[in-house]
Image 1 (cartoon, rainbow, N blue to C red):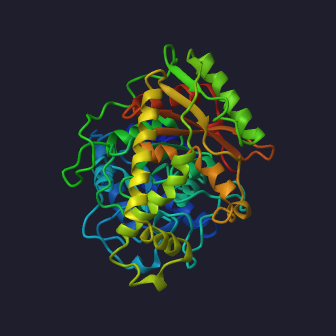
Image 2: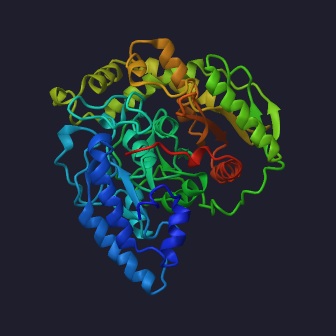
Length: 465
């Protein structure tokens, strides 16, 4: 069993569904691995061994009757701890909620359970899905090196995947929180179109910016999970009624006829040499797969980056109105200060942000009339360190550099796919990002699968002892 923990979900599912591997034995092995390794990685907020083993026994009984529910049936996964889990505490990285036990499952959790996935536990995250971990919580540790940033806010999700503590998980992304931990930990993350996945039963950070999406070891695995969690939801009026396609139906042989845009200025200005080299290499791989590479000019992101904190802070203040400022002393300084900033924004200033946001979204939509995908870095710097990222709140240049490839696509709601695409001199992961028009996740998955068929960056893992 110890040899299986780094397999992709599609690979482990084939072993499970052909009854070459027992769901119960696999789950027991994964729980033992977590107990052995997570004392120093801190990826999990809590384990759910009783639930996991009960689900594993159910899966095994069904498979013995040759009944398979889908691509994640019997596969051990973990859940970000902002998704409600019935009867299991759900704290969203906030000690004030450590005893909150939901009476129902979040929509994405219910869909994963119905698909037969096995829940190993809940994954640690930043406070309320904002930027910082609460002072009373030990942050997850990047398994590639303890000095490296683990990403935010889905830090536990990225760490658990990279360390082989689960086969897939979910992240949420309000300003980069699927993409940052995917890049930092060398895994694959898909931020869907806003509204593609329902957010019912998930702690809110900023309603018009929040996305839920899959994180896994490959684009194919992300496509399989997205097919389960996407779709309309009677409990969530913001969830799109757009039909959910088979995200794995497009194949992965080539990308002939796919127009891929590159902006030499946007994609390289302020970007370090290692990331620039990874982007150039990725472009050549896509060209070799038959993609039509085109030079484009991406709309200026200055206003979108500057406006994101304003829009997000106001919506965060609304989301926390029931407990802030009445329970301010229980908040960490980062989230408390952010909510204070949101409460201070005037209606006039907020309306100006909304108008600029709509205009920017329109310009981005117009660009995708001439291209199908945009290739850009996942972030401006390769393998950022914890010490370096500690300056994020006080260094506006660092904030702008980190935000320029992430926050604009929360402002537009565009889908993106983050892929491992290189490594530093030390062997630490470097990522690239593909962006598509709204509801073109199937094309993102197709392109990601083709890229990962030609490269092995996603199959490289940290050495853990």
